[in-house]
Length: 231
Ligand code: HEM
Image (cartoon, rainbow, N blue to C red):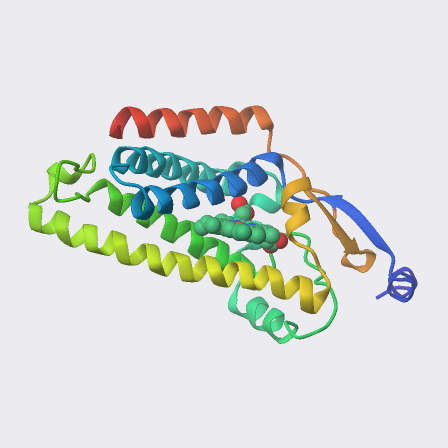
């Protein structure tokens, strides 16, 4: 640690850097909206199964997009940046109760795994929906490929996994609240603006790469393929 860093720590100097690219931010808040709409269309509305299926296909396309963006996106959108080994996760876990903001610009090592789990489960959930049926008139686009009993089994799993997802989303939101209340760090505003204010000692640099044109093209391909093949 050099003199500069010590000075920054003493004065509490902060730097404002761009961390989340626009596709990541739009992806996140659209996913939240879609999850709410999926819940409402499945549980609260009558006869909304076609709407539910359309929303489900949109989620499927979005998550596939996000997985590709995890390789082709900007610095902090990349899995290679935030998926860390057990050592880093353990070290970070020990600092969970430190009453100071993290030095991580992107997802912290624990949060990174949560992101992966949320993406994977959302993908599986949307995938299961393709094989489900509602026992009346509706069948998912791939339900015809399996027997009725298998489709019934998958439908049960599709219902139960949603509850698991709800619990995980609850944990995810609880972690965000924890950061605000315990570490004095607001993670929500950066998910809207893209900018994080970090202690200067974090020595993080602004995100790079992740062309918006590429994102639009990738998203169009994902939506096009999913709806063309499965709608
Ligand atoms: C009110 C509800 C929610 C709030 C306030 C919220 C907040 C946040 C915040 C602040 C981050 C960035 C965390 C960080 O700085 O490392 C984040 C990331 C993330 N959240 Fe949420 N979230 C919510 C709901 C959801 C839901 C419903 C899902 C879907 C399953 C979800 C999935 C994700 C994913 C996948 C990421 C990683 C984003 C990326 O890298 O693409 N969140 N969320």
